[in-house]
Length: 354
Image (cartoon, rainbow, N blue to C red; front, side, top):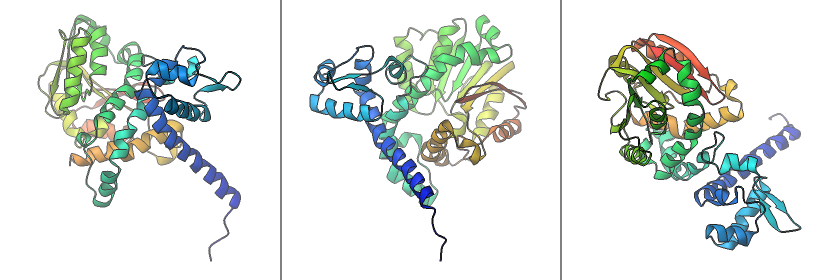
């Protein structure tokens, strides 16, 4: 006969699970609010009635009122019963409405549509050991991933991360060739190109729709004279003589990161450097019992690992493989000089050279 359960522990854990259940449903509401511009319409507007917000957004008032009720329950929005008005505080707008703020995080929720849509494929993958490739997800995933990472890159890439790499900023200011491998929508590439007009930048990604989007953005931002984007895999991107090769939050997604490192070692100019940006997640499970660690590991179990498995390479790292594993793969590929150049709660930035 099993031991008697500690009912206090049962109830405490039940409360935690119910909080998570509420957050899972609320996440859909957050994604809807971001996609429909509801948070942007409330930002800086002061108290609004439900009909007033519906008029601002051109949406159905009854749905808007129900969405607002969910926002109040989650304490995203404040409600004043006396005036029947709703307020998005400026501090909340910096997280949910201002896409240029380094704290903007709504992109994490707009990914959910595509990830939940692949649940059946993920269930099959867990049973069979097969993968779920990046291209099997819908456009909402690519949009959400780009929106999620862009604020952090905008806040740290030029002012903090690049200066942490020995001699790289001086080279960029003089003018050098840069390869941004796994560039996605090109946000990282374009941030560097805007900051260093004397250098030339080449973004590579195996996902053609993302490359097309990056090209359009380069044109819109007036940077097409110094940036190109091409469809290419991480282990056979074209060109050489690169003074800097970057991998932004993508190395762990590769089925063969060693091959990508070998190609980078071949393509570097003398004295060149690789900058590898990876999630700040630990290899030891117990060290990820944090808010951000939970987010990273859950994303890895549903997106990063299945994507790597689909490539049928020698590695399936997940996004929390840890520094020692990455360093070993790089060393075997001929990149043996390794330094942790910068770190923040979400990212670890490595300076890697032959």
